[in-house]
Length: 365
Image 1 (cartoon, rainbow, N blue to C red):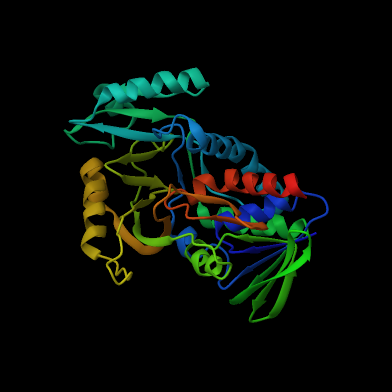
Image 2: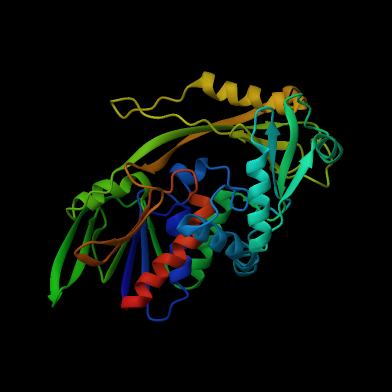
């Protein structure tokens, strides 16, 4: 059975690897760009699951599924491909600032403990003791989630591609999709042909995981899934030594600003959230990026001495008028699935998304 996946960001690559473990599937992935471009290449890879306020329903189940899968997925990929994937297992520290409702965090702590996940609430003294790099009068404490993670999105995606190739998946990069045609096969079932710059590719199952490119493809199948861009900017800085205790380097976050250790004295800082104008065009706002850097410095003043080594930006796919992400089966098109619109949680939710797509295919295989 032929499965065709359109899109090879982290979500498409995760789907390809997950499906490569299902017997009887012949899988091809196409993308106009090399893997891990667009929103994946711009992501920080902060996996905020347990420390998120999502505590029930599908939003929490997907986070839980992904976090649990990452613990086995990373060593699995490293063993299979020989690649090293930066995977920070030292947790996420969320700063509590003046005016924050600490009762909400105490309630979340109770819920997580009942679910079997640790969540610690620190006062200012413990914060200063364990993370001396945080020096801000507004930081009255912190919430620490030792089981949340951070991962390098590009390294992860490239490892997923290599591992899927090892299992026989074919990847075609630099291929533009020109159109989709459907043909009645028998009963209500249909075959699909993807018209591309490399010719026609037939398939039994079509999985659209093309981020912002998903909407125009779905329109060709007379389906409207409105995915809109939201720009995010980030930067990498370098210090001569690590912040605080070199043996304890969690992700530090506060006021939606992330300080992400990536080895030695290097840190990622981000990210902005910039919505399009009426013209749908978004030009990166340098002042917004600088304000994010200054906020990071306000939390960890030593960052003022850091050298900016690079900056980058990317467009995140955000569904309009519905919760993110958009995952499902097209009405009237039983064998067309979509997995897109993950907004700011593509890396976090990629494993759970891949599992969901696998379940849909196996259910009707």
